Image (cartoon, rainbow, N blue to C red; front, side, top):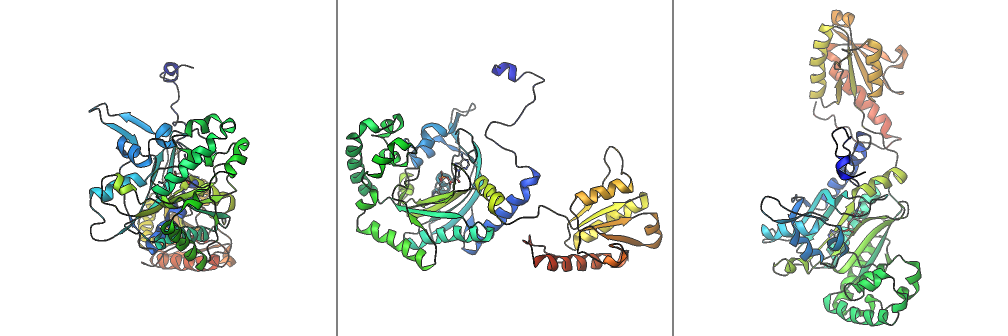
Length: 460
Ligand code: HAM
């Protein structure tokens, strides 16, 4: 079908390939992840930064390196039709954060611990765990030079996996030294691969003189043998780089963070030096890296700032969400506390007042509202109440209005007064207090055996 045909008037418009909607069924899981990360980042003293999704194309070309996969073939770049500016949808967060740090002189008085969350864009071939719009949560520590911050960033991640109940993510660690060390290694590596040119595939041939380190990353089984025997960057490290790397490992060992050293781990951007790391899961198929990062001391100078050390990571939210689905603790999706069912005009009015009072007390309240079919029968409203996941249905009909009372019906097992068919009548005046007590009691009960998603009814 031609592009023209596709855009014909009656053709259904669908989402762009590789760019996904986040639907309500998954929203609770995203929220759980986001809230958990945010509170952990805060507990380590990280502050949020938000940078634009669009940046000058030159920022990424200069920062990530023109021979990186991302800059070579994955960027959504375009010319602004209004003024001819060359712009790009950000493929990652580090370059933009560093630009902002420089532009606003953020490290003027002290080093900064920063974090961000948001969509990134890469024109890759979509598959499980790989999308064209995806989301990252990242942290960048700018102005710190020692191995302590590298280890801190790694330990922060470990804490997150622990809190989310993800116990099968392993840490791979490497050091890629500094520019001179890599230069030496690079020369030897090129010479080595030149002597095995017949075994190199097209991709490797293409990279031989531009980015030979990336050849070590190959997934091609036919090349594994020569790649395994290639000169290892680790053995080119000078004293300072080695001491830094050992410093990171020492702190990790001291804190019982398991890791393996993967001498072939090189990462995809040019800005890295010294420590690099990836967190990998075997439960996600071929796109198992849930988080990657490392030190990038050269980047700020590349952007024209005065030399400033830095280190960071970014995690792929979609991949973590999938991992939470396959291996995390069971998580109860969004539930409200109360669903208000009413019959008759008086009851409807009274319901709206009571709903507001319950919300004042911190409860999550869904008030039944009319659709194009009207307000619906009692039975159909009760069906909605059930589907809402509410702990209680509050029912107000003509009788209740006459007596200034509400029927409180427990919708879930283990709730409320079971002697009276799970329901009881409560006067308007004591309703809020009664429901809050019931919810708090129910929460305490369920905390004993299930994953909590934190009710906070403290401000009534
Ligand atoms: P990265 O390894 O390119 O590093 O991306 C980090 C994470 O984003 C990956 O480990 C993966 O989980 C996720 N990710 C990457 N591409 C996709 C995709 N197409 N679909 C779904 N998820 C994806 C960076 O971006 C660096 N800026 C990290 C960093 C921060 N280094 C230092 N500071």
